Length: 504
Image (cartoon, rainbow, N blue to C red; front, side, top):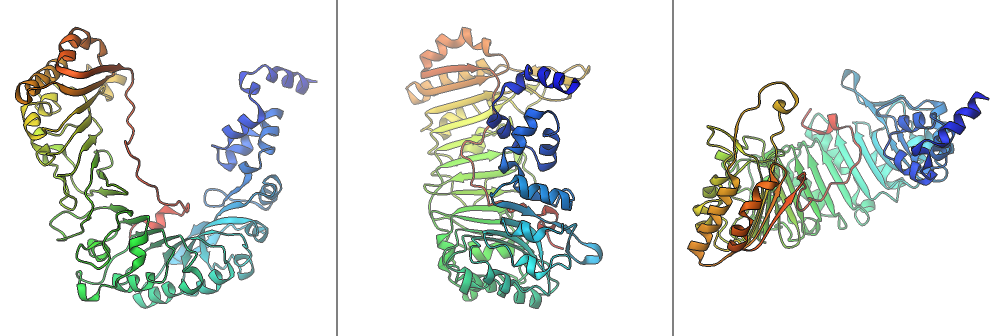
């Protein structure tokens, strides 16, 4: 009786007025454990959760133990949908293996479309289990000394995406295991290849890559070179590199990266290849490091990520710095010329000086975030950007966007007296536009101000600012920081990140 009364009461709850399909979509943002908890809230939620097979398709053993009962539940509630399987990797006494594997792993792998963190072959995962994934298209595996990867790959003809972490201790072992990635069977169908923890000579890796004709995404993580420097005589030309859609280097030594990006190499970066280098060597570490033939027309600087993101005509380049990234001492990488950049944008409320913009002679659009500087501080003043130097250095500038941000710090959430801010932005903007009219002899093109601090301050200046520009607008409300042009993302294998970043 009480259960019936509770069900009747729950009917009037606003959230229970959602259709089951909407509830199922909301639950899709949960992990498996949260989905199980949601299904125990009430009968409506239970029906929505059980009736959404896609909620039960992730078998994640990396974050929790999947019991035999849980495995049975997943197999039943996921219907006929393919599964995403993620093993748990442990490393006691320097030996990798998969732990807490349920008894019904063979049934799970029979429906697995993607498999991550597979230690091939682990003592807890026998050959007949590994070789029973007939629809698997994506595999991330850790290769040990006894692994027969060639046999595994030959039995799985549908693999299109492969990530390999070499758990090796010497170059001979690494060479043997890398050779097991048989290009005879994978060369025409492999689209994605991620290689991690490699210390082989890059020239040997390039010879290995020659036969992968269909490769679109190539990623290296934690790789180092035993070849002291780039040598053109040993460089192996590979058409694979010219056809790549995405090429990524993370936590690799400069000596390793330069073998693939050297401007004098026979396979320059393709105009359609997106390139990520994290971290990028300092200019004086490797000279020359790399060069792109096509110019960059757009540059976005993210001070939080310490990154430069360039947009070319048909691709993008992202360079991430490991060292200091302080605006007063910031210098732009010399690998990509700035003369062709027409759009420049940066975030995080950190201003660059007009002197640092001298290289942007063809700049036509400028967008940045700004917050007022403290009284008595020479930094974070809008006049360090909008001044006569900007007028002189950027004669083609036609669009200016300034996002005025509030200070978000401990003063707003505590009883500490906040400091005083120096904010005369309306005066600075007016003086800049007047200088532009005086020097250039014409109105400025378009000014867009997004002000979440004091949008009302512009009302008395609007007539003057409209007279100095062709278009002038002020937008109030919260400013949302979005990357103007998102950089393409690497394919996610859901690998154990603790194993993939850096060397052993």
